[in-house]
Image (cartoon, rainbow, N blue to C red; front, side):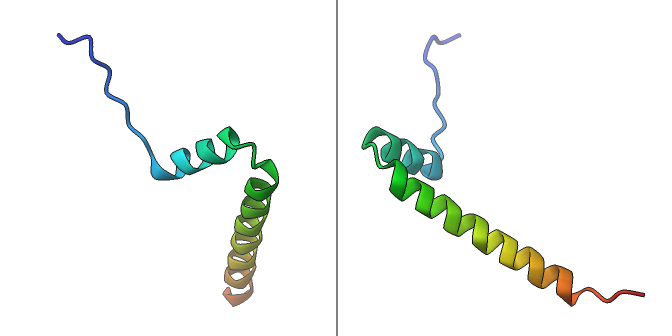
Length: 53
């Protein structure tokens, strides 16, 4: 058995880590808020497209 540890790196995790390393908290917050707004817009559109019986 090897003592080597395999690391899985998700590109999105690496991007977040880079923002945190560079102390770009405000920019990261802006990106996360925009993503949440998109998610809520998609959910709202999906909710409105469902027919109520």
